[in-house]
Length: 390
Ligand SMILES: Cc1ncc(COP(=O)(O)O)c(C=O)c1O
Image (cartoon, rainbow, N blue to C red; front, side, top):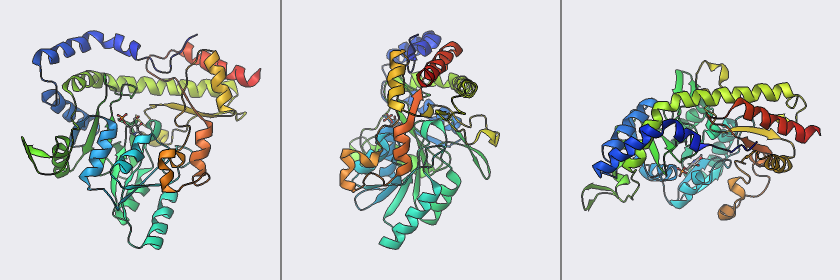
């Protein structure tokens, strides 16, 4: 059985007529950059994320850059983040000549560890006096929120801006002390990516910054168009971070289906959980299924399963075996960021973040998408069973 890692063709097939008509409408309007489609999408995504303002931008990576620019992060500033994330999280910090400071993750959710975060901030203040750390970027990895309450408390204490990287976590919920909160509504800003493979993906690149702060939203909108309030007059230094109308139009159609798709992802995740457990692989500690940390919090979207990631023994050999069985898998991420060549100037070494390093050796992302069938899931788990037990 041939099982793709993601089947976007199947998704397109289910909404083809709606999408095609909408694309033709945009083409007829000949309005391709920003405009009413983008404004409507901004309102709809803001509402979906329980946030007041959305600013559509060219990608998730640009959403990170423009957020850091809005907080005037630059040379002499440092930003704390996780080493176990997509490159763009730390790349954005370096691009602005600020310094990424990495902090290890916790073992269960692969997200920034609040205890280590506190230790890092305390040490930094002890060693360097009043901190040069200006912000933090917690990343809601794989679709599950960071334990934000302690992170937000510490950010307040140490006066850090909080940029939630929710590129993988649109709609994910977190049980805050004052009720369930959506990803992007917890920090000063939150960012989303609409890369095609995301839970809400466009037909190309796109992203959004979300915030409850009206002034900040205005600044982000200014930065998005080269800092120009009136055409050819520039108030601040910005860039071209604009979102296309065609992307916004596609995303608006897809947004109407997102709740249904999120539910189907959860159903497939819980089916995986069940068949892995029944197979005995979990009990024998050959496969560790993902922990849904907020499952019992009462939130519907306690995890949005952008990825279904297991920890396994002999990961690379298992992956080869699954390849032979025509089951496509992925590794997010094989090398933590502190060990990447481009960040060697930061001076980190192997052993600095053992939890992230161990995760990089053990994690394996299995196919998960609304169109995945139970038969396909059965085949994947039995192929894994065959690897360990034959
Ligand atoms: C955690 C994280 N941050 C940022 C990004 C960057 O988003 P984009 O690819 O839209 O630039 C991604 C995309 O993969 C991501 O997974």
